[in-house]
Length: 587
Ligand SMILES: Nc1ncnc2c1ncn2[C@@H]1O[C@H](COP(=O)(O)OP(=O)(O)OP(=O)(O)O)[C@@H](O)[C@H]1O
Figure (cartoon, rainbow, N blue to C red):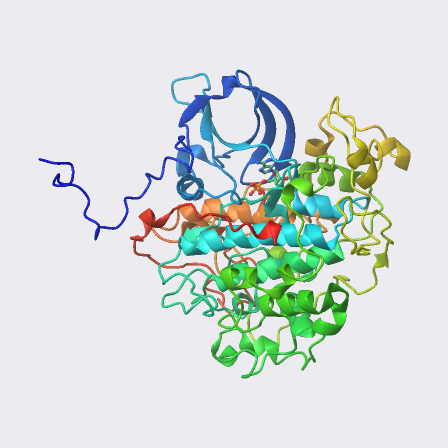
């Protein structure tokens, strides 16, 4: 039998797919499990209800990693958090340069026969998250850099959506950046598969034909359809978050800082205009539409507010921040937008300057030490609990108007005099939040800022002593965190009325959360894990973390904005594949 005759794949058969466990270079993508003893733990980077993140070094290879501890709130009763299982499963199946790679799991065995041990997700160490970079007043993005990050963000988003994954928590704090200029989308704790066809060119996010849990996405990045209670949503929800991040890179702060869901919707409509049948067809069929009638009508202000982004930038922004999710641009179309081909052209990642490391905990430490800071966003109806403060039950006429200052337009601009090292000539004056403390940009041990650092960062970073603050106690970040109050309650323990039984009642978030990432998220994390056990063993488990989160306005009503119902298993598990990333940087 000749080779030609031998049985094998015929030319009509589809090409064989690479096994999911192998990356584009033929190397195993996910190594499996290692002992935590293989790592030297260096410092804490972030902390949430869901887990702590530590920087560590692999003892034998020397590789720097981030270890994300999986917190078991109630290991005996709940077992391994199902949301973490889902996150791990999704991450293991993804392979793209703009998506964080789950390298392996690490196990810490505890003594005693009945202990289960602690599990860690192991990721490559990334020097920053985007929120941290933007909070550093000495780092000013210029347009080639913003374009470079946007391309990478859109490439990662496109890859997710083409592989039927919704991220559902797109925000600056979940975008990690390393000192080679690579941006990666992280935190898949709320991600899930979607079952509808993937987006096509010119087709926006398509149309959803089933219900999903409504209460997803951190409020400041939550799109109008979710705020109005939409459950048949599409990948367009992620593109709204991309739009928010896009403008945030110019402004230097989150652009829509609502104190409650109601306030959030109001801020959106003040920017994009009140919803009408023309700009958001069908908005009046959504359960939260009554709330819209309580304010406005507002005229659109987006083009005026963001004119400094230039006509191409404003055009892209307005396509990302379309009220109508069906007309909101999808990632593949956004990548073709003229913004990326007009001057100044996008920088290449390798041309971007490096910065001193900045992570969630650095920011928290600093903010807690500045006790005199004026109040940050109040956190809105996330805080609805037994005291009922700040929430709205969802019935028309009961509007808890936000009393916080929110994101007023009064920001102090800072002239940007830094030259672009690679010849770019566009400079942007980021408008800084004048309530914002400078970022604590400590250099890592042994780190000597090079010329680039000197150009882009305050030499040596700002020390707490420079600010006349008391010396930092050991593990100040941890100690400074808000004390946790009573343990989280579940729906079993407390129900009824408009008391959100998924929301813990520990007190205020303090002034730390300018970005709205952590306080809401901490509560959410608790919700997320707790909610799982009430949901049977299938379905949209991760969603419960946000259940009741501002739910009064989202139209979910007292019964809940959560609850995606039982969901079919997706058959698209094998669709994951690496896509070549367009070499758009070189255009
Ligand atoms: N691979 C990484 N490299 C460096 N830092 C990381 C990495 N992963 C996470 N971090 C830091 O830890 C923070 C929290 O990570 P992540 O969002 O994955 O956890 P989380 O428990 O979901 O936190 P949150 O509730 O704040 O979103 C990030 O904002 C980032 O500052």
